[in-house]
Length: 446
Image (cartoon, rainbow, N blue to C red; front, side, top):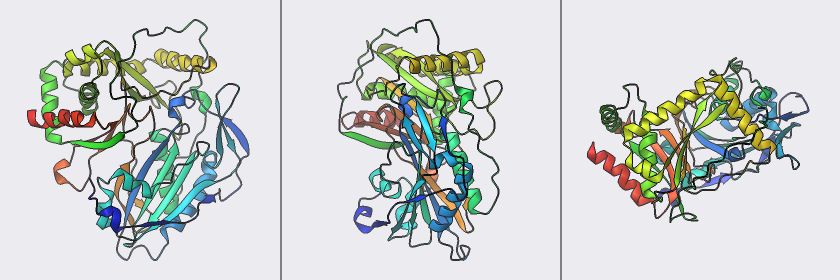
């Protein structure tokens, strides 16, 4: 993690927040969102920091903050809903987005150090990283940006977007649009709203309820939550894969499937979940190209289904990694069936219609897994003369944060981690040492 001396050796001065509006007139309208967008557990902000290094003598004296502000203003002509405001209606709890060009909150900041002194934010301390993202935007605001300039001429972009408006692939599309417009290019992909494509039909018959109570942890609830990233090296993953295959998993097993099973078991032990209760692994599967007909290119709303693998704590403890991997792999096949996809969206719509859309509180029994390694979140260049050096994600309050786990690319600063995976977890402080023991044991055994 970043040395503590960084905290006292640098400062960040932030300007007043301004609202950036579309550079041209845009439609004034009220848009509805999809059934999937309306999921209460997506009522959170996803935040990432993009680090851009100035190439010597190539920036031509351009102010990067002004360049990005202009690119944002142009992008909002196409992505005008992002300049509007979200509202959840009182009578039915559904979301509406009022497109009135109110504007995107935009903040410019200046740091008194060089990016190299912070190791280009590689493996940075999360508390320190908060200096480079927009502070706590209101829930009605779908999109925020902060640009922080550094003494070396480089800058960071703190990118914050409401998960109610866009998923990870959609966020990558928006960011790519900003990068293209900053270079004076036309958009390679034009945005498409069409949220009605993923609106379900309420089911008339009663929904089946799961009667098995969730597992409980002696450490939850807790107000003392610790965020940490653990890294698994590529050679450890290779050996773990070989072991999993020899135990009965198919040869096409993926890193995601293996680590999902491993981390699920590790959290069970770290949180000391009771073995009689139910545990659940959630993971998202994208629908863009799977549904028939496929969603149009440019669709930037939530387009995934959450698949769930359920086991009692005892079953999770006793099953081998290979057995759990096979369950995950089998569950991933569900979304290949369009009838399954339609029924799943219809079930979500039924719950919305019945007012059954609660925001999940952290229990530890659920592990919601998201994978940021292959979202295409990095744009190589902004404007003329700034090259991407790093991108990092911050913890976000989704599924009560404790129940969320994120897979991340390994940092560039450590060559030994090339091809490895970062595992971002948020756990009660008392449970974190045990989770670390599980990760350490993985390295020792392999």
